[in-house]
Image (cartoon, rainbow, N blue to C red; front, side):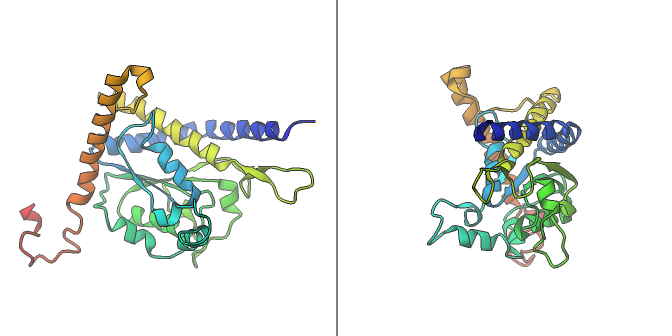
Length: 276
């Protein structure tokens, strides 16, 4: 009898096959992201709920590099307490509060040179859907990671029925099944062991690999966070410091002109565009 863990691993291999079939789309996403980073701008990365995992998988961590703006709202992603204050019920409620996404993006000066990666396995909760919608309206190219089969069979929380895929310039599929969980346990009513995180991480790191190649070919090799036991302690420290400095300089641009000219009165001293 096949062990339950082997059943899961067999299904994981199928997820990786699904990701591999999307190599052209992965390269397209990497191409858009490379254009953004080479232009000195940032790729905005957003996920609510457990999709936050994909945001942190992109940056910052070993094997990653600056150029990404990780947008992680603790009110939507802080699951550790489960119940009580800051509990999961509140986070799941807030994921479907219309208008929260534009309030989040109000903090950044977006540009049509930017691009974005929005992750939502089901593609139906309001905040990630409205996040993609707002980004597109700002002229930002949006790449979505969803669990396509699950998303297609799920009901959008929007009155118009639109889902994340409707506001994405490119859609990538984790390959997980409807409901995400992949293993049926004899005698247990419901399946266990989700797969979207595995498929999502494979997509994120495939994009990262292609992107690193494109940046290097363009003469702008990325500053990769690298372990000291790989390159030596001194070089690892140099890379960390340089990468974090680059991130600081890039993200500063997202704040420098916030509010100009839409939200700041021109009558206020020192707030006109020509005064910057």
